[in-house]
Length: 65
Image (tube, rainbow, N blue to C red):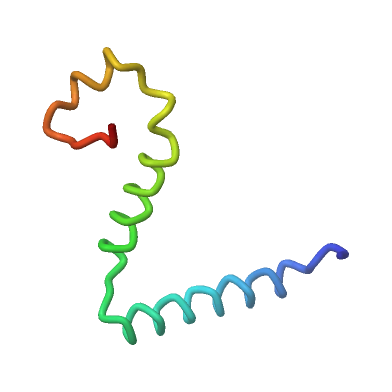
């Protein structure tokens, strides 16, 4: 795939934003909820980087045992 122009990149970015907005409207979601979901998935995917000692600090969270 070749390089795309700045104009093409701007159009792709604009359409991506419009599509996200449309899907959020149709599903009744919000950006805040989406960000929260992404944060949760990121934490789950990277939980193995946290030591057992560090996990003790987060005693209000439930970790899969």
